[in-house]
Image (cartoon, rainbow, N blue to C red):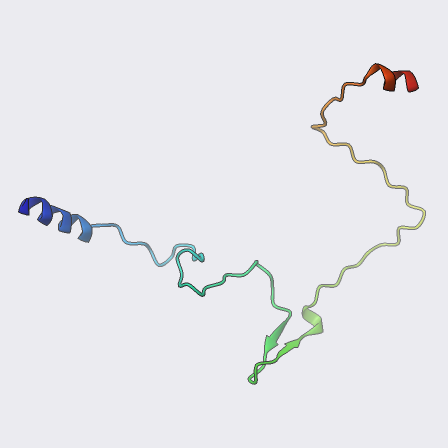
Length: 92
């Protein structure tokens, strides 16, 4: 009995420790940790608790002129074949 207890304590000390270089996630951090959604900040926090948005950090989308542009239908490469009934085949 005592030998098993001593071996168990020895195994606990030999347990592999987690590396500090592991990826930090909300499961490995403290309770209030929030990693975010991989977004870049659009501004900065002020000393008095405000937030200033910097216009240079906002996304700028350049959309070309699409007048007189005929879009084509997108057909998936893995489209399934649909069985037609006799009534729908007769309509064609």
